[in-house]
Image (cartoon, rainbow, N blue to C red; front, side):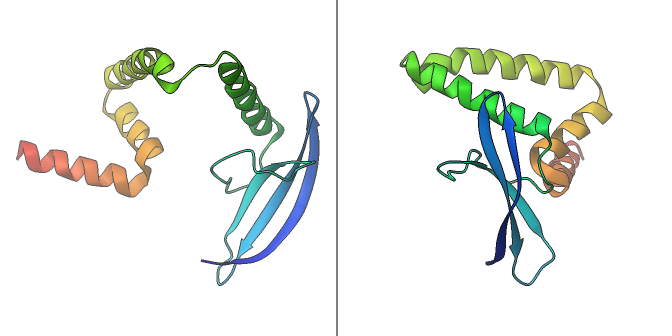
Length: 130
């Protein structure tokens, strides 16, 4: 899929960070994606695009994440320094999801894998227990 058109569709200043919102319309579809860019450099601030124009709250979350990356880099952390904390946090979340019952598990799988991925997992589980 190729880009058909790019436009700057908004500007925001949040917590002393000035950002612009770029909308990309894709050739041959009505699909659009939105990116948060640094207003000065026009560097993309996220790895993933938004399907809708990001809200101020979503922009704040992106900027907070960047501040934390800068903090970690300033402390000269490596990915290995956070391994244990990530494992503990993921394990705790998995336990909460599993204790929430079938509907919570399925919602989690849909969020993590999308509807097709969740369906595939459910179908594979059914094959194992059949």
